[in-house]
Amino acid sequence: MEELITKYFRPKLPHIWCPGCGNGIVTACVVRAIDKLGLNQDQTAIVSGIGCSSRASGYLNFDTLHTAHGRAIPFATGVKLTKPDHNVIVLTGDGDATAIGGNHFIHAARRNINLTVVVFNNNIYGMTGGQYSPLTPHRGMATTAPYGNVDRPFDLCDLAKGAGATFIARATTYHATLLTELIAKAICHKGFAIVEAITACPISFGRQNKMGSPANMIKWQRDNAIMVDAMAKMKPEQIEGKFPIGVLYQGEGFEYVTEYQKVIKRAMGSGK
Ligand code: SF4
Ligand code: MG
Image (tube, rainbow, N blue to C red; front, side, top):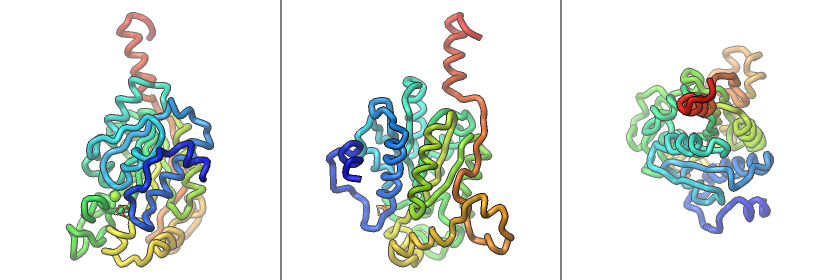
C-alpha cells in the first residue's frame, strides 16, 4: 500500500475521517482498481460533491474537482463531454447522490453517459450531523428522526436500473477485494456505471443505531451480504433482511458522449 500511497495520494495528511470510518477502505479500493487497470493518471479525473466521502478527491493525486453539494455528476458530465478520452470517476455519498443530487443521478443514468460513480453508502448524512438520507433504513435512527425514520429508503441499485444505468454493482467494505474488482469493471464499462459501496459510519449512523464498534459494523456487513448468484438459489426466508452483492446488472445502450460526438459531426456537415 505504501507504493500506492506515494503514487496516488497527495501529501496532505491527516485526513478528516473519524477512527473506524469505512471511507478510507472505499478510497483504497478505488485506487487499487485504477492501479490494476494501469490508468494514466493524467487522463483520469476524480469528481466529488460534498460530504465526508466527497473529501476523498482532495487526497488523491489526479485531476480532481471537489464541487457543490449534489452536483458532482453534472460537473463530471461536463468533464466527460469536453475530454471524452478521460476516465471520469465520481466519488459521492448517499445523501449527495440521491437527495440533493437525485435528479442528476437519474438523468445521467437515463443518458447512459460513460461515467463511473462510486456511491459511499453509509446510510446517513455523516458530515452535517447525522440527518437521515434517502438511504437510511425505515425505522433507522437519525438526528432528524429521533423516534425512527418514517421514510422507506431507495434501493440504490434498483433506482439506477430503473433510470437506465447499464452497469450496476454493489459490495461492502468487508468485501474489499470484490469491491476493487467491481470498481475496475465499472471503469471498463462503456456507459453509466454505478458501484454502491456499503460502508460503516460508526459515529453518525452507528452510535445512533446502537451498532457497536466499527468492527461490529463490518461484521454486520459480512453477515448480511450475499453474492447475487447464491442469493438467487436461496429460499425467501433465508434472504429476508439480506442484500445482494456482486454485479447486479450489465447491459448495453446508446452511450451519450458517443452520440453527442455524432451530433457535432452532423452539425459540421459531415457524418450521419
Ligand atoms: Fe466517517 Fe461517519 Fe465520521 Fe463521516 S461522520 S468521517 S462517515 S465515521
Ligand atoms: Mg452518507
